[in-house]
Image 1 (tube, rainbow, N blue to C red):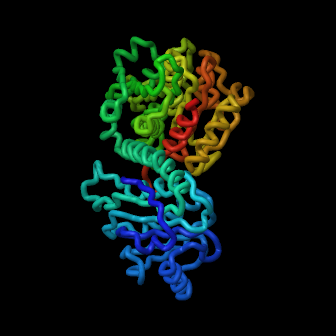
Image 2: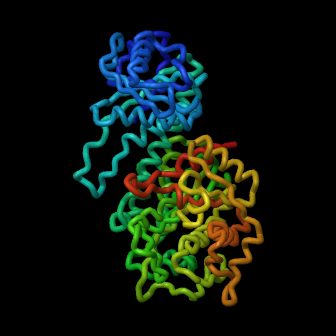
Image 3: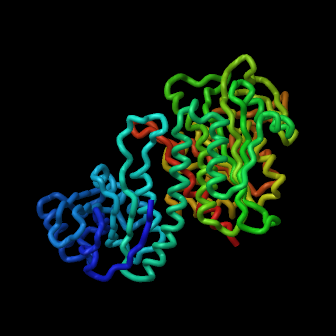
Length: 487
C-alpha cells in the first residue's frame, strides 16, 4: 500500500481529490478546523441522530455538497490516544470496504498536534482492513482495492512527523502481513521445509543472508533437545538463520529467536481434539521473527540483526519421544521430558544456546509457549519475562509505541524449584501453578551468557471464534525494539 502525507491549507480538505474521505474525530463536540461543508454535513448527521460524538459512532455520508470526494465516512475515537485512533480508523475503513475505493484521504480532528504515532495507528488499521487470506481459499471474495492512503497534515512540522511514522508503519504492515500469512496456512501448507523456503524467498527479495540447516546438520551440531521433539514426525526439521547487516561485522547483533512448531498435536501427551486445528498457529513466534526481519530489511537501521527459527512438527508415533525420556541439550544439560506437549521450550533451549556463537548484544525469544499465559493475561498483552530491568523496560516501551503491548511477569528464583528432577539436570515442566513462569524459568537456565528476554505470545498471536486467524503480533513490538537498539 502507498502511504503518503499531504500538507493542506485550511479549507482544502473538501477540495482534495480521493475516492473517499475518512474523518476521524476525538472529543465530545465538533472540533474546530474542519472545512465548512464537512462541519455542516456532520452537524446535520448529528441532528438526524445518524451520528454522535461518542466512542464507536460511525456515519457514512455520500455525495456531500461542497466536497470533491464522492464518499465521506466519519468515525469517532474514544479519546485522543493512538490506540483509540486505531480502533476508530478501523471502523472507518470497514465502512468503506467493498465499495471499490482505491484512494482514501484521512483527516484527524481533535487529536492535537499530529505525530508519527498517529500515522502508525492509521496505517496499522489500514493494513488490517486490506489483508485477506487466500492461499487455500480461492473462493474468497476479492481483496479490498485500497491502494493509496493520504493522511492530511495542517503544517509542515506535522507532515514531517507523519512521514516518519509512515516510513516505520509501511515496513511494519508488510512484516505483519507476512507473519499473518505464514501463520494462517494449514499445517500441510506450512511444513518446516515450506517455512524455510518462504524464509529463503523473503531473504532473497530483501537482501538478507540466510542459512537453513537440515536434520543432518542439526544432528552434527548436537541439538539433542530440538531433535527429540522432531523425531516423532515424518516431516524433517529445519533450523533457519537469517542475517541483516546494517553495521560493521564486528558489531554485536540483536538476535530474535522464534518457536516454529508448524503443527502441535502434543506428541504422546496428545492434546484434546477440540480446537486442535488452531495448533497450526504454534509457529506464530517463528512467523513474527520472519515478518520482523522483513520489516527491518526495509527500514535499514544501522545495526546487525540475526533472526533464528527452529522449525518442526510435534507428532505422536513409534519414534516419538515419551514422557520420562531424558535428552541432552546443546548446552550439555540433560532434560527429563515429563510432558511431550511442553515441546516449545525444548526447541528454544537449543536455539538459545546456539545464539552464543554470535556474541549477541541482546537475545529475545518469541513463542506461543503456554496456555497458562493466556489464563494470566488474556488476549490483550503478551507475557514478558526478563531478569534485566533495563531490557524489560525497553520492550515494554516498544510494545506501547507499537500498540502491541506486553506485561512483565516475574522470574524469581523461587519459581525454579518446580523444575527439579531425580533423573536429569531439570524437568521440562513444573506444576500447574505459575505455568508460564516455570516455562520461562526453564528457558532462563540456558541464558546465563546472554542478555535475554522471553515473550510468551500464546494469547496474542491469533484469534479464535468467528474472527479466527493470525494477528501478526508481535512484529510491531519487535520492530520498534530493534530500532530502539540503534546507538
